[in-house]
Figure (cartoon, rainbow, N blue to C red):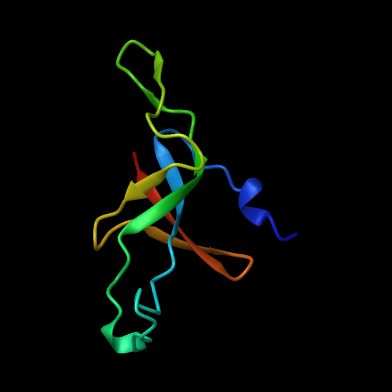
Length: 92
């Protein structure tokens, strides 16, 4: 039950990503307060759809693979909660 996202497969050209955790300690060992932590714009791809269909009906595969790191826009995407973890669905 801990791997619910494995059952959750995005369709077409959608990608399911999980944001990386914000750093809470600097390299020097100083703890960063929660208010000062910036929004993390990096995520790991968890699941990938089959791809988009072209006008002639062929499927164009998605260029990212599961496990790759991607950059996210600051706003956008659909928030999905699976097993108390937050994921985002994005267009590829």
